[in-house]
Length: 259
Image (cartoon, rainbow, N blue to C red; front, side):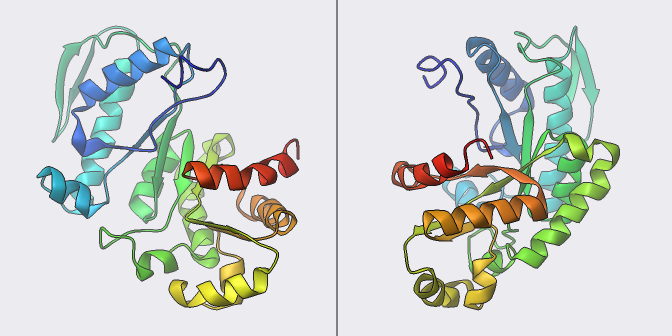
């Protein structure tokens, strides 16, 4: 519906849990969306992390290593089916025999793939295979908690970028870096906001001011922060969620347009 109502807007899931669908089904659905949108799809896919997703659906939540193994195989199947002609694959989790994935996506060799994560193994996979890499806090408990918020701090983000860079090698400069914003608080009293919210993040106001996944302060202060973060982390793809939040972010987008 979004693609039909627009002519330039890019579309895509942020992100599919690989465990929810067989990659053959995912490949067909995503290629179809790319065709129907005239080549505007971005395929966001991950190994799954939210415990409630699995508990509510009755799907077994395997250990992280198994889920990442399955994601790696699933991604190989999806990319193979995007390519020309029949495709075969023999893995631990998926076996494909001479299947010609149809339709073929408009974008070749396939739509841009977005993989996000917070741990070394999934970020290494993203560095090797993704066109867009999301740098996220690791949610080891399966639920967003204080430990997850701490894992998103600035100095931890530096380490995460190093994992991606090491895995990507020569292709690192071709990767777009993505970050999801968890908190956006636009106000003229930045210091008061930071002081009141720092205990929730179990940190100091000074550390929180540099937190990569939150915006605090006036439009001008936030714009300056985003420019500084781009210089530090090369991040250019920022995600805000919810209609009210998007409306609040609009003056910041306008302020930074063309910079």
